[in-house]
Image 1 (tube, helix red, strand yellow):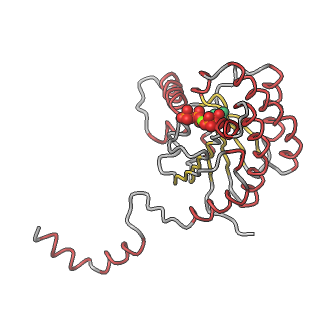
Image 2: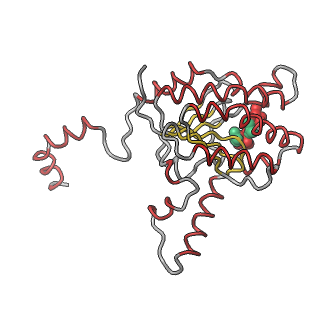
Image 3: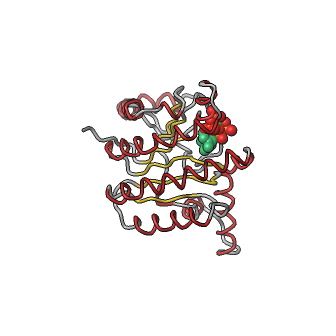
Length: 251
Ligand code: IPE
Ligand code: IPE
Ligand code: MG
């Protein structure tokens, strides 16, 4: 099976509500169906050799949703933890939650803490749920923490990065959003500065391993230049150095 060179993939799992509404069901039905496919995508990421998979499950902005919907999302997180715990441990996955989980029920907080503790030495896929997470909030908290610990010292990009919630995850290589909308919605703002973006029309409950794999294969072929020119242009420019020098002198 072919492995990917994309180390960190982030997914905005969007479109649950519309998936249900298209079928004349309540929005929460979409969340229930959406939660059932998460483990397929985790498995596929593992098979593809991805090092880190970060899933956006609940944003700081999602607090504005009706209480009933928020409660369902809390319950689905708990269900996922109970159901997937043994598989996560068996597959050597390191599980973490990033974000403010303080408002979750105590029982769920304990399930998270236990799974984080029991999987912390696992060296396989780093699976992270962004829950109660917001990119701006993360950056502001990192900056505040730095200022408090280092009064008077100047912040650098490296230092700020080291104060993020999970700096070990590194930069995002590919950010996928399902559900058809083309925006980032406050997800991993710092880490995605140079991420490849892919927007799928598929609503999250219909997202499959096959589509995920196709996206990864498609994006793996893109040339990532990080501000530089492409490698063949770099060669040409070396060969043309003398000619270029003349052009530059005559400018
Ligand atoms: C994404 O699906 C799940 C969460 C935000 C928790 P939505 O609930 O946003 O679904 P749509 O975008 O309304 O279809
Ligand atoms: C982003 O989806 C958050 C999650 C998928 C958890 P939203 O549905 O909340 O985003 P907006 O409101 O369309 O930007
Ligand atoms: Mg949405």
